[in-house]
Image 1 (tube, each protein chain N blue to C red):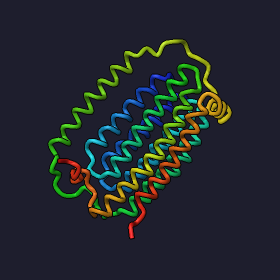
Image 2 (tube, helix red, strand yellow):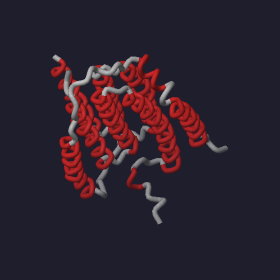
Image 3 (cartoon, rainbow over the protein chains, first blue to last red):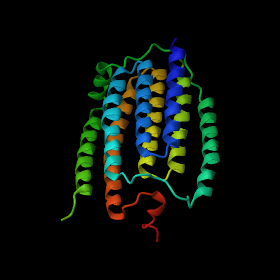
Image 4 (cartoon, chains in turn cyan, orange):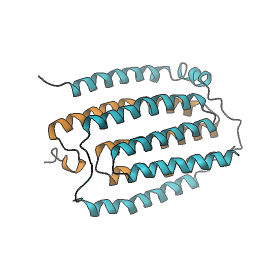
Length: 163
Length: 100
């Protein structure tokens, strides 16, 4: 049963990523991205990381996807990526390059011994994650707030129209 | 329970699709979305490794990655909008003005 769920979700994730790659219209790409992020959230759920699944839906599918759609609506130049591609040969070259990269990664991942017997599943609720965030990772957590503040100020400085 | 190595393999595939998207697309928005796919693949691997090692630390790391991704998307989209205002065209191949 869990295998069926996993392979269904994996097929959905890979398919939506392929849709993002192949569709020319960026708004379709954004919708495929939402599907991809949703399946990642579901995969988190199958790994008992409930808190991360919720955060994934809120932050990615909520905030980031809306930001993307908003940017596309602001920028919409009708059709993208039309006309002849001046760098077509280089782009075609990227496919074997990525294939080699995937082979490398799979060799590394395959050789890495995921040793050790099956451990009991880690609790991933807000309780466990919050406990570790506010004890061992308290300082990085606070630095994150500074990072988000810097992002807010930076975005305002970048997009403000100069009179 | 599906073994963690399956999740890591899926994460590797998704990451490579993100790399491919960055390399073959010309639209900076789509390139950004491909970067998000790569970040999500890394998150998936982190959670899988955390499960394998029996700690919650992988999930804490994923939380920080999500925060950084949110900040990165906000700033990156602002930069794209600023470039679009100057040039009225969006293609990463034409943005070579930093080149000497």
